[in-house]
Length: 248
Image 1 (cartoon, one colour):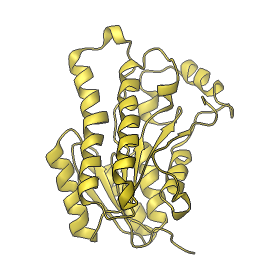
Image 2 (image 1 turned 90 degrees about the vertical axis):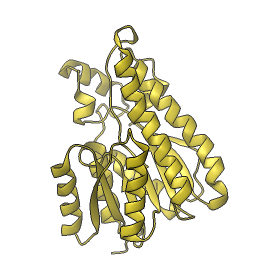
Image 3 (image 1 turned 180 degrees about the horizontal axis):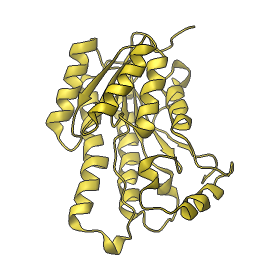
Image 4 (image 1 turned 60 degrees about the vertical axis):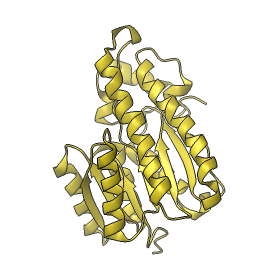
């Protein structure tokens, strides 16, 4: 079976569970050497690496707090030292806050922007400095930037920033044939998504999709796999909604 990402190296941030886990497994199955980033869940990251290795792939767990530029730079350097190059960056790490704008504290605001925006920004910066030409960067946004959903104000604001960073970086890295795109999942069945929601609220969100269900992490991983493939070589600077018709 051909391995389209053989001899390519990918970093997946926040890859110890949820969407990041499935993305890491998918890229590993496609032949990429995968750096599985985590901050607290060392056991989860090691399990993802073990699963990739069991299928004949290469993977390395690397701890790195996406709030810290020093951690991000060290992770990229470790990747290049271990595997020789960085070809793919998946900026998946993020936190969620389900609160009304009126209730959000300054500390909560600073924390969600530090991880969702600052971390992604500096990961993009390190990739711009150190990624091999012809690579790919995928930034995970959210379909909530297109929806007027109460309780999502701070989260949607961070993802709006992600989409703008993506567009500008695509133009900056275009001359090096590095594709930069965002994907915007709709509701996806992860612990992060379920945080703070009742089953009734989740069912209501599922009804909003054309397919009448919430997504799975594999739905998102499959979209990422396409966007980092050669077949997607003419796609850059785009925000691809992967939401089952949740919103256009």
